[in-house]
Image: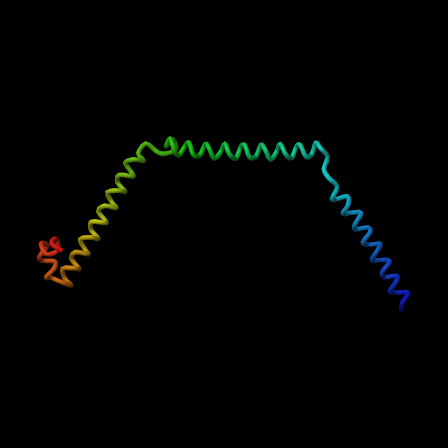
Length: 113
């Protein structure tokens, strides 16, 4: 039995040596040209990425990407929001008048407070 255990250990050691050799080849450092090509590729990517970002900021700042009616759309939306707000305030005033008719009927009392 002891002989089998030692054989098993020698096989394990041989397998470990083979794995180390294989991984040693995989861990070999790339050549200088490959490293240079990788560095230039990363540099190029970063330059293009930053130029793209600057372009997007300029388009937003100069409003180049917006339609000619954009300001009119914004004005319409602003009017719609204002109407909704006024409607909501009117409804709140009506509800307040129903809940407490004394305060709602005399606006002079609310101004004096």
